[in-house]
Image (cartoon, rainbow, N blue to C red):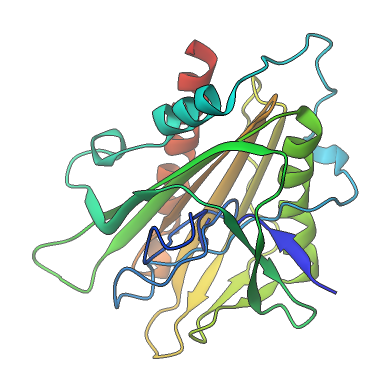
Length: 263
């Protein structure tokens, strides 16, 4: 039995053959190979298949129907919401694989190893952008981030994706990537408040590269508003940078949500 996950980071969401790397969010990650030898260019990945709802961070569905979008409108919206280097702040640059769309997801098998599955039929638009923050004085001190936006044709599909991020986290506190890197969840992650969102879910943990080094702290923040699911992922080079990692992921999520509310 496999539990499906949108294909983050961290994995990230990806059009088959369109990218060679992924750095997202658990929330939504494309199926791709690393863009760098640095182990932080990878993210845990979010879930997209049905699961039981979690009441803790889910608000009642609004009575006003969400906007209906054509695939072209959905794709344009996703592209407009995903963040570029200038949105993250001074010093950020594009990763070697910077942006892409997708037609596959990742999932996690019974042993919590990452696999690939077809894209959910409810998705009508998606986009991923990946950035990094190098330190010229310390080449090994690399921070990386990504934002993933998934637009569904209905609220049900979006709710399933957001809720399954929790289900995957609970079932697979340790996830293993094809290259042997492991993402290990830290229980009790801080859950930030985004009153305008319908669902909010934050996950944090440590990344353990098979080649050694680290561990590297990461945070994945998933927000849902109507039919749109947005994920921000950020990782830092050392465990003591976790407060900064939390702040960066939260600021990225805030900016995407504000853009959506203004659209």
